[in-house]
Length: 387
Image 1 (cartoon, one colour):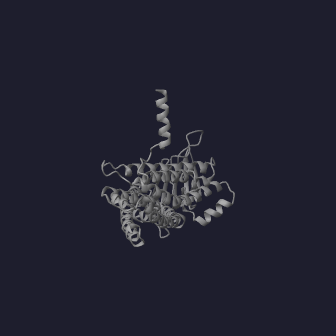
Image 2 (spheres, helix red, strand yellow):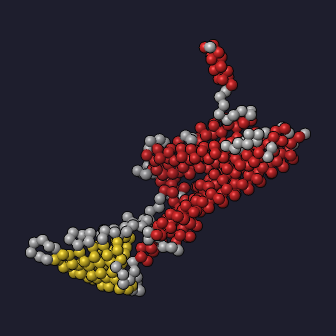
C-alpha cells in the first residue's frame, strides 16, 4: 500500500511538521533577538541624548515585543519550511519519498494547515495585540520623556535648553516646583532675565515643554533710545517658546485599535484614507503568510548531486522584495495614488501565482525559471529555418 496510506501519511506529516515548527521557533527566537537588539540601540541613543531615563529602556523593550513578533512570525515560518525541505533533500529523504510515490503535492495539506494556524496567530497579533502594545508603548514613552526632562533639570546647576536658554534654581518644594528661580532667555530680542519665587515645567497639547514662573521680575536690557532697560513685575509669566519636545497624548495610527480604526476610516475626514490604509495593511500581513509558505515549499528543494544550495538566498531576496513592495503600495495608498485595498492583491496575487508556478516546476523536475518547452521548440525551429 506504500506511504500513501492514512497511517503512513500521518507519521510523515508529524515528522515534517515537528521539524518545521522546531526550526521556525528557533528562527523566531533569533529574529526577535536581533530586532530587540536594534530597538534597544535606538532607546540607548535616546537615553544618551537625555530623551529617556536609563531605567526606561528595559520596560520599553518589553512593550515593543508584540510588534516585533508580528513582523518576525511570517519570516520564521517561511525560513523554517524552506530549511526543512532543503534538509530533506540534502539527506536524500525526498528521493526516498519520491520512490515511494510521495512528492511535494502530498505535503501541501500539511503546509496549508500550518499556514492557517500561522495566519490566525498573525491576525491576532496585527489586529489586536500589536495595536494595544503600541498604545502602551507610546504612553510609556511620553511619560518617560517627561520624567527624563524633569530629572535633567537639577538644582544648584545652570541647566541649558535649546535656543540659548539657561535655568537655575536652588531646590524643589513639596509640590515639585522649583524655588527660587533664575532664567536667562537669549532667544528673545533683546535678551531677557527672569527671577521668580517659584516655577515649573509644563507640556502643551503640541508636546512642547514650556516654563511657567510665578511672582517675579522680568528684566530686558535695551541699548536703543534713552532707556537702558525695562523691568516688569509679574504674578505669572510663561515662556511660550519650546524648551524641549515630548510625545503628545494623541495616539499614532499604528496604536489605534482596529475597531476605532475602522470607525475612523468610515467618517470621511481628511485622515480617512490613511486610516483605511493602516487597516488594510493589518489585514495584508496575515494574508501574506500562507502565500509565503507556498512559495517556500518549492524554493526549499535542492539538488543533492550538485551540492548547491541557493534556496535560502532566493527566498531572502523574494521575501525582501515582497515586503518592500508592500511598503511601496502602502505609501502610494497613503498619498491617495491608489486605493488602500491594493494592499490585499497588488503584491499577494502575483506572488501567489509565482509560487504556484515554482511548485509546478518542481513537481515536474524542471528548473524554476525555465521557459516552456513549446516556446523553446519554436525558437529552435526558427533558428534552423534561418540557417
